[in-house]
Length: 325
Image 1 (tube, one colour):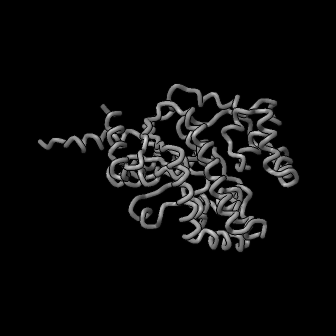
Image 2 (cartoon, rainbow, N blue to C red):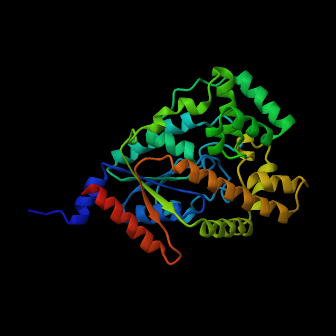
């Protein structure tokens, strides 16, 4: 009679589970997800609001073609950059279709991402807020053009400081949505998000989080921006701007794209655009840290300077295996 090895038994049990790896931008979560997926024969679901766009590759830090050939990835390259209709509800539906498809193949699921609202949806479901009001939304988008996005973010701090603290000042889509909800209902959007206060995720996830000291994070962010520019980010954006269909407001607002677009339009020098990318990415990381503090049952991995990819992967494996015992 054949007996399962401890690892085979671990894999069999893991197929019933789902692993979600979160962390701020440039934290190393994508590398951990890839290494872990190779070890446990998993497939990966991207939890990122910008990797959904086709041809926006360098600035969104999509997995390389080599990684995509080695491991099946889901929820990337879904829509054209001109598509402004993609939202968290559509993401939730399509992501869970991918989850079920992977598990139907008896393979583990690893979700990887840092878009906090999408991660929240994956863990806790969607909140019962009002549907879109296209008239109000159009008015708010027009207000952005007239008054600027900082003015709308400031307005959000006055009516819903909790939401404003969690939403990046550069995230036009979510700022507009939060103000839209307030105008339609008279209530702040944070008051609808009560399911996020649940003591445990609605769905069955093992949640791993990567943390680094802030100075280490800042160095990694600066290095990533430099690497993106060297890899051809400016040419990528120039090509996107030359396409017949214009970039959607949502796509244009992505960090890296917004700053380089300003440079290409003559509003910033290249050095100024790159420096602004670094600053805005660090601000995004700060907002992500604030969001992630509200997450329940995260198994945090505190990464030190001397840690290697192998050592971090081993720590993740240990946490996963301890969850099964």
